[in-house]
Each structure stands twice: as structure tokens, then as C-alpha cells.
Image (cartoon, rainbow, N blue to C red):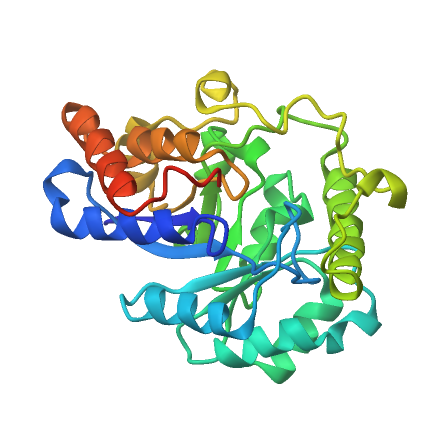
Length: 312
């Protein structure tokens, strides 16, 4: 069984992810036995987006280019349409519906949490495979097992259950389980669900503001929605989270999870600093004996393609 990794940043890390896919193709000997299962994220001004506020602006041309570059490589784009603050009025959003229409080719996917958006996508875009989001906070074995029986291609396991093998071994449909390996959130955080809602509200306010005033910076303080700005865990790096109980070590993926029947894994990092993301990819995906040359090669390719000058 081969590990399947879902990697972050269809827009924020677009150039870097193309470079990573190229390096993986040209230097497979540097990397562990895995495949890119998807690149996930959302395009700027996607009001349906959740989990992390997606800032910036883009046009239809950029959307089509990203979809083509990834899909031509056989890699799905998976949209993080996990905004729990959506209302029925948001379902007709022109930008998100345009994105879904352009991506409606049977390859691409969406992650969902809102029941009204899930129903809308199932009705209007039935070709999309749907993933049940970790934002649902299914943090016990019984509720997770019930979710796995539903019509989802993937169910993201709440990361408080990572490494709890007594629970994991009893789960049905292990091939549908996806694990977020490097969460920077504190284990058993009592505010996590509220934080996801706060991000959703900020995404809605941000998208509406940028559409009306594209030349004016958005100030979340003015709108009273500084999403989780006081959370000390939002920007922790790879080295600060390795000892968390929710962190999954690279060796455990191949030595424990794969033999149990789990093969779906997700790396967090849509809003990560580029060098932190490079280090994370190398840590999880490169063979330890080739970590240094894999890191150097990625940085060299980034330098040649003028990616290092962009603080992604």
C-alpha cells in the first residue's frame, strides 16, 4: 500500500507546489514511497473557504491556469470549502460557482462541513468527490465510525485521535480515513470549533470587502472579526510541534499506519512561510538519508524560478 499525501496551497503555494511536483518526478530516489493525492486550498475571495482565511485577489485566468497545471499532471485540486458560518444566501456566490464549474471534470474534489453547502454541491456538482472535514470535530471513535459509513470519499480524522491506536484499529473503512499529521493546534483545544467559525466569519467579511473595495486594505479589527489573533499556536513551526501528542512522526506512517490499512495523510501549511513548508515536505516526504540533497534541490529550483523572493 502506498501513502497518499494531500499537500497545501493551490493559490498561496502554487509555484512552489509545481516545483515540488517537478522535483519529485525528476528525483524520485530522494523521496519515500508516496503519491500526491491532491493539492488543497481555495482561490482568493472564495467565500466558501474555511480553516484558514484566504487573502488576496485572482481572476478567472489564474483559476484556469492552476487547474490545468495540476490536473494535466493527474493531480486533483481539492477545495477547502469548509466555512461553517455560511448561510443560504452564500450558495449563489458567483465566484465560487465559477470555480466549481471550471473544475467540474470528474477529477477535482471538495472538503465540506456546512450541511447546506454539501447539499448544494451534491445537487449542482455531482461529479465532485466530497471529503468530510476535520472542522466537524468528530473527536470520539463512535461518531467518527458513523461518519465513515456515510457517502464521503474521505473523512478527515479529528487530530486528537491521532496516535490513539486502540480507537483507530476498530474503525471501519480505514481506506477513507485521512490524518492531519502536523497540526499546530494544541491537543484537546476547547476553542477549536469556535476558532473555525471565527475564520469563517472573517472569510465572508474579507471576500465581501475586497469585492467592493479591491484597492483598500482589509482591517479585521475594524470589522471586529480578528479571527483567533490572540491564539499563540497559529504560527508554530515544524520544530515546535513535533512533541505534541497529536503529531504523527514520518516513520510511524510507514511502520504503523500503512500496515493497519490507513494510507491518506494531509500536511498543514496553506498560510505557512515558504521555508517552513520546504522543511515540512522534506521531513515527511524525503528519505532521511537524502533529506539534505532534497532540501537543497527544492531551494535551488525555487531560486531558479524566482520563488524565494515571494513570502508565501
